[in-house]
Amino acid sequence: MSIDEIIENFSLLDEWDDRYRYIIELGRTLPPFPESARTDANKVQGCASQVWLETEVKPNGGGGPTLTFVGDSDAHIVRGLIAILFALYSGKHAKDILAADAPAMLDTLGLREHLTPQRSNGLRSMVERIRGEAQRAIGTAA
Image (tube, rainbow, N blue to C red; front, top):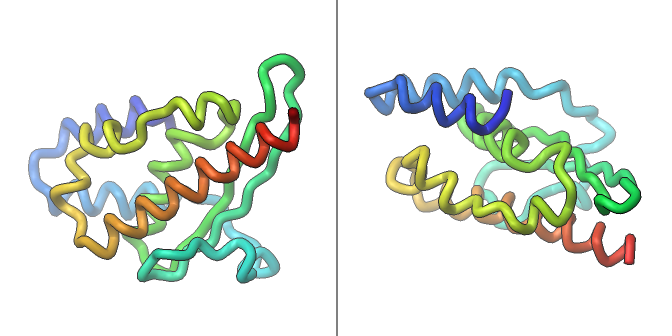
């Protein structure tokens, strides 16, 4: 599902209870995360919940490296937030990941006002991790 579809679906839901259920449903669409990938290296620091993120980098000629992500969390709502971030970032060129304005997109969804401070910090940590992976991919490709 694209980020535009998620934003559109979000706009159709008036109540935040419905939006939370939708976020949880998005989390259920994530592919299974291999037990072998639940390592300290893949763990996202700064999240109150357990969050793992694995990145695959593919060189892509003149367009620069492309990053694909898989991830998981032990919290249902966080799995949904991961799915939203993957809709925004996964399968994209590193330079596009760095150019994307995640805070503005998350504001469009109204998440900032409706997440606990711990979840907001965790979401920020996931975005920083993804951006860091994109920065490293560009550095490695150069």
